[in-house]
Each structure stands twice: as structure tokens, then as C-alpha cells.
Amino acid sequence: MNDAELKMLEAVMANPSYLRADRDLDFLAQPELRPIRMQLELLKPEMKMEELGVRSTIVLFGGARILEQAIAEKRVETLKAAAAKTPGDATLQRRVAQAEKLLAKSRYYEEAREFARIVSSSCQIEGVCDYVIVTGGGPGVMEAGNRGAADVAAMSVGLNITLPHEQAPNPYITPELCFLFRYFALRKMHFLLRAKALVVYPGGFGTLDELFETLTLRQTGKMQAIPIVLVGREYWERVIDFQFLADEGVIADEDLELIDFAETPEEVWGVIQKFHRLRG
Image (tube, rainbow, N blue to C red; front, top):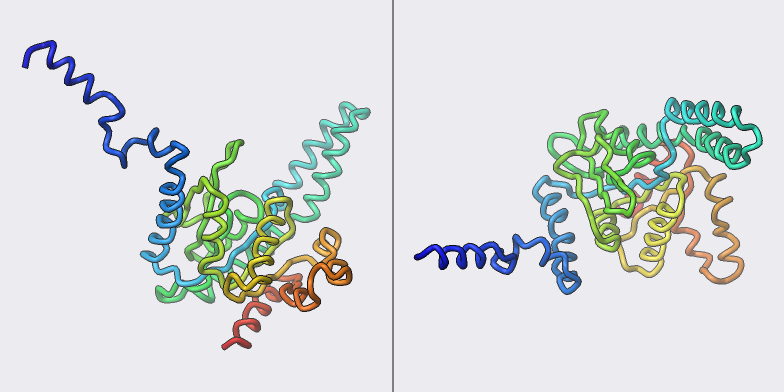
């Protein structure tokens, strides 16, 4: 092979079209390959959880902005100091008020952590992996859930997702069970495939989205029967007037039975145990 032929061959082999299809990331990212990407996002976590013996899960949702008390207190102090320097800044005053509201909710961080400790220490014994805690893998209440499992050397799952702003998984997730998703739909499917309960702490749009997705699937019989436990009745009844929906006739009275309220980690665990005990 002469020099000219060698250069031609090098050009051929350097072209992206010569990459094997499963190694061509640009090709796999094309819109036409969406069905393949979705199948991969279904299979990868499913196969890994099966490999590690994760038989059932408890899904824990809650606000990413609800932080542990010491961090929430520091944030309030920082904002108050900034607001004191510019007392006429209404935006800063608003941020102080919001930070104080979040500080008042910091107890949910420790409660979620304690709940995860209770469940994980009760249900992951001698290699059995039932009721494994699953969270969205981010900060706040999600971190608390994974942290509680880590406190007792138990496994937990984190289902992170690619977002426009940077998001990293919290450090308490079991490394082999930390997954990154592109598609919300596949992520939601993995939340509920093995779920034996949904526990929802106060949160915002993401938490509400996941709550109503689950309520709709339960209402329509599209998933297995699980308890849906809302922690903090005062918060949830202010955010969503479920009784009003029933009174207006847009949901049935029996749909209200899909929801339980609880205030403490022990109450939450009691609701879940009772639900499954009654169903054998």
C-alpha cells in the first residue's frame, strides 16, 4: 500500500460512519434512536436491581430545598445579613421569609432520614433486599432518605435525571444503584415497578408531579396496590384540598381512601405495615 492509499484508508477509518453503531454516541443521540435509548433506560436499572437482589422498594419523595437544620439555619443567617445591608430590598426580604419557611420544614429532613433508617434496618437482613429506599437521588429530602439507609449500612437507590441546570447525585446512594436518566417517563416507571409504598414529604412541582402520577395510576388500576402516605397533614391539606375535589364530584369519594396522612416516621411505617398486613 503506497502513501496515498494509506492516507485514504486512514481517512475512511477516521470517519464517524466507520464506528460500530453501539459505540457511535452521536448516532445514538439522534432523534430516530429515541426508542432504543428508552429501551436502554428501561433495561439498565432493571437488570442491575435484579442482579443485586432488590425485590421490593419504598419510594420516598420530597422537596430538594428542604435541608438539614444546620444548613438551613446558616442560609437564613446569610440572607438576613445581606438584607440588613440593603433594608429597602424587597426581593431580599422575600428570600429571607422563604428561607425561614424552609428552616421550619427542616425537621422533615431528619424525619425522612429516621424513616429510612427504620425501614432499612428492619427489611435488609441477611442478604434479603425488601423495601429498599428509592429517591430521586438529589438533595434535600431525597438525600435524607438515602442517608438514613447509609446510616445502617443498607442499600438505597437514586434515580437522578439530566436537567438544564447542573444536578449531581447525593453521596449517600449505593454506588451500584445510582442511575442517571434522560427521560422522565422511564424514571417514573422505575420508581413504581417494585414499589410497596409511596411516602411523600412536603415539596414543590416535582414532588406534586410524582404524587399525582402515582394517584392516577392507583385510581385507574394501572399499578399494584400500595399505600400513598403524605407526611404533614397541615401542609398537604393547605396545598391540595382533596375533600373539595370529592365534594365537587371530579373524583369519587372512595378515591380519598387512596391517601393516608402521617406525622412521624413511626406512624408512616405503621401505615405501610398495616396496609400490607390487611392484604396478606
